[in-house]
Length: 388
Ligand code: NZQ
Ligand code: ZN
Image 1 (cartoon, helix red, strand yellow):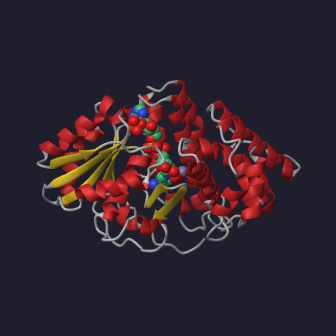
Image 2 (tube, protein in one colour; image 1 turned 180 degrees about the vertical axis):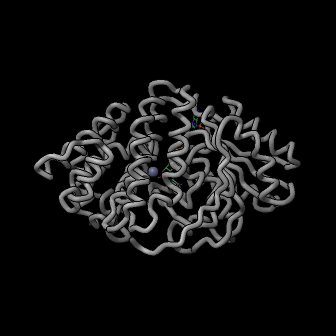
Image 3 (cartoon, rainbow, N blue to C red; image 1 turned 90 degrees about the vertical axis):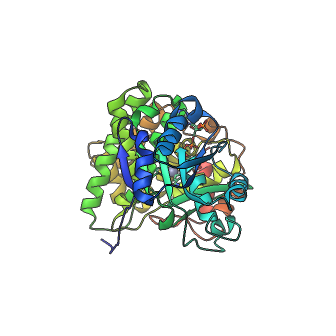
């Protein structure tokens, strides 16, 4: 196990009516009321009434609310710049996101931009490092990206989807009311389930040894997602199942499952090329295509880990031949993805025409990706070709 220093400073408010305590919690964290900016997406937060409930809660706690809607999935830099320009001199004390990963990441980028005089995209190009951000609060409407507790922020600009991770943007508090997931369309339910699963996989597929505790925690969380993912897809109003998915998704990406080990993240790097190339592609759907192809390509380099995955996560009976166990594990995983009605090929994703070679080179523009097996552009090209 590797040395580590870990702090997760996000307060998690979880359960029915969680969103009603946003105002009180913000007051508690900020110490005094003031102006806050509420950011939301393309309209679901207005239609379901959660936006109104959050704003009321803030106003009742004494805050003055400014709001801005219109964040698109796979959020764009243009919207962020526009928002920062509008809000910069208005004395905003905090940014409140009401939505999913796209809205929360937009809020994080705006929060960083408010504390930086240059262009916020500098951070995503590695030209500057954020050291300060306005406090962010996240009211979750879709369990998927885990951004409500994560240090990550992923933004798209002219075909480049780039992510950064810094502690100053980790939300001060996250509000999760699983009843608020009842209005999700099936594809977003499934894509979200697959995304949270992948956030644990990216940490579980590691070369670091002697991580029995972290492995056990990760395997339990993965089995929970395997069990309850199909349940929320079958019945979108199954509150108790949503509680398991909501909690798993939020912890999946707050760093806990990576304690003491090197993480991989190749599948995310490859998927971000796909949804950066075509912004209409949902991140979780892209992952459903990339992960099986990645597994088939890299499993021979780390067979022991893939046997453990097959047996402890996918419930495969160990076979006499290690290769057979691994193949059964991957096949069972693909079957689970298909049961979630997600695509498992580029063609089914609607990306048969994606420029594999140039995406692979763009993916490796800063060097190899992944750690279980460090992948160069040729490897990424082979994986994407295998995903056709
Ligand atoms: O825009 P609205 O109308 O709100 O509709 C949204 C959107 O179309 C809809 N939706 C959300 N809550 C709903 C709802 N519809 C009905 N009822 C509700 N309760 O769902 C659609 C998708 O929303 P989005 O925020 O894009 O989903 P998600 O949470 O999956 O976020 C995806 C983004 O997060 C990034 C992804 O790359 C992608 O850009 N990620 C961010 C991470 C992070 N910051 O830690 C980590 C992830 O790996 C990921 O890369
Ligand atoms: Zn993800």
